Image (cartoon, rainbow, N blue to C red; front, side, top):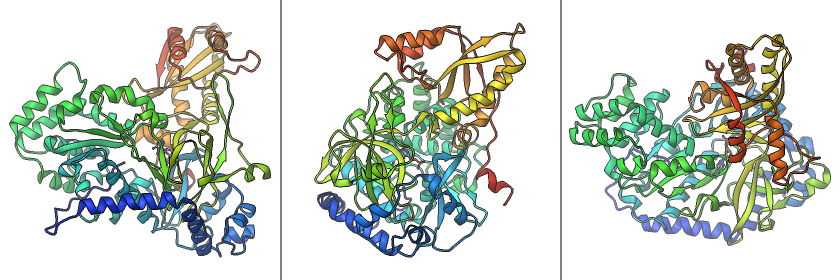
Length: 613
Ligand code: AMP
């Protein structure tokens, strides 16, 4: 994730980049060396300023600010535990419920509860903490890639729609909140935040116009671009696909120096006009490259000075690495940071390492961190087991930041400045090493998530319910679903969910294709709001597909798993598959395939607010 872009010009006074970088790196040295002291102070600060909030009074913390009392008294929680408090705030209760500072807005997490995005309370000053984390990224990067201040970054950044709670608080994703803040828009000059996209193009609410104008500005300044990126790998690939579809229009604009009439947002047009000049030579060059049969290495061909691609490819995003390698001719893929709506966590101090070796150093000033050990069930799935609610003994197993053990996996638990206390984020991390006294973590996975294409995170229970709803369409045909599994197919752009269905057919009437299409749509309608937003609004997820497989396919799947060492007694059909030979096996036995005929319904905000607003 890049730092905040800024449209300011270089100030006349000298900007001492070297000194600034040195100070930032020294800050990292200091907080990682004194990790435990910093964590103690952070917790004391959070607890003392919030001593009188209702949540602590209910639990009887009685103004204690020390770790021991906090850990003995306060429970380790999930979203469901604080949802009643969150709902009260959303409905207008302004008393200090979770935080003594006023809740400034809600950040809508990509994690869901009851099919709706989770609402994370936040306070104004958190923006400063997020800015701080961003400000660490380039000084770290500049140790490995010199000269990045001499050119620009081409980042595709977008805002998403926002909603209002019944009480009028804004609810929106954390990056939308950040990009719209003055921290982003009015940052002081920094040579590292010299971006090809003017703010207006990023802040344009129309995603087509935003992408088009950002791509146009990126192409116009192609020689100056030293790094490219987006937040997640999926977003960067979407930008390449956009270019594939629209390069003729873009070339026409560059040739004539005029902006396509579809771009009708006045502020975007004005911002782009400052960059776009008639350049027939550049238009010819882009046209020649884009009309070649192969798009291999298109990034390095069009932006020849690019040194690396700044995108998150850890976690589920690793599925996009081969596609990125293809389009970028193997440029380094750099994962700079690890963050969430709840809190920004840490940075990658060795950004040129291989994606499989990326580790994030948690910055001890960001929040108070605790770690719940998780066990791995060895078997074919090597599944991770994390208890849903913790008993007293399990609550005592949580360890502090400096006490984690090398190689051990943990679930991350945070206590933030903005009203989350011992909150389970849902991410599983593995200790990969230490920077001074602060651990560095590999991101392993998001708990329970089986399917993910972009920012959607679908768990097994949601999938099961969605399938259950869909199979009702089969009842009139006396057909039932014998077995199913799923796969996130990212070979298509955008990627899409595939469900493999094995049917048990008792009736004689053939099932028309429209019935399976209805099944696809019902599944999509039943999935969570983040999935549906990806389908409808962001177009980051393609239509869901059902592949009907031959009878006996799932027996073959079991045979295969057993041949790989699964226990025959304990074998359970995996509800999601990733392993290539298994996907091949399923595909080889598919007899027909059906797609969702249209987009599911989606609207901004929570279902229950629609009636109240
Ligand atoms: P959100 O719920 O939209 O705030 O997204 C936050 C979640 O995205 C985190 O809890 C992680 O599961 C995931 N995430 C964020 N940064 C990274 C990263 N660098 N690598 C892998 N996953 C990440």
